[in-house]
Image (cartoon, rainbow, N blue to C red; front, side):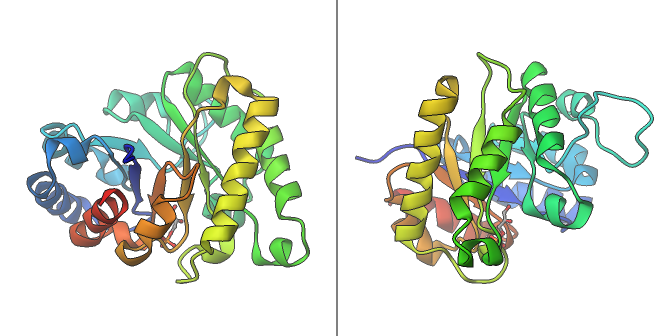
Length: 249
Ligand code: 13P
């Protein structure tokens, strides 16, 4: 039975406003109204205002890549979730591994960001994942458990949540996790939610890490894979839509 999968594109620090607008025009012409419902784009914050018009014509949703845990204040260089919301953003990534790795973001910071986003009725997309070293030393589930336990320690009941499992060793490396690895971890995350945060037990769990049109179908058929968080392949309309079409086809 086919189900509605989510296809989320994280552009990271790529594209300028003109390039973003060209992408949005191309995407909104190429996708059907039904496909558009499955798509969420996470452009750099500096491109968001140039995207809202053309994406809105197809109801393609927009997300922020990061936000501060306070709605406003003396935090030079940070993005305000309140402002993101006022720009039409509905989702925001929290704890992407690049934020953890290059900006020393901690699980405690994630918890505060999840709380703020949920209290603003924005959808947090909490990203979790282990490094290669952690996997090889058999610590994967402990690491994920800690990221979930602390990251969701301030979550707000009755609000939405998405999760993204992104093994760090599969991000931008071309090394996609095997279907067995993905199935095992998504099942583990689902079970953890059921036991510890039952209010979020039905939350979508996305997989991210070198997803391409060629491997999307196999990954999409795994139970508890509710969609993808796509980096490199979301930068071109053909591969981004190709992932969605392969995964539902
Ligand atoms: P790639 O698809 O380029 O591996 O990136 C995954 C990712 O980090 C999405 O957030």
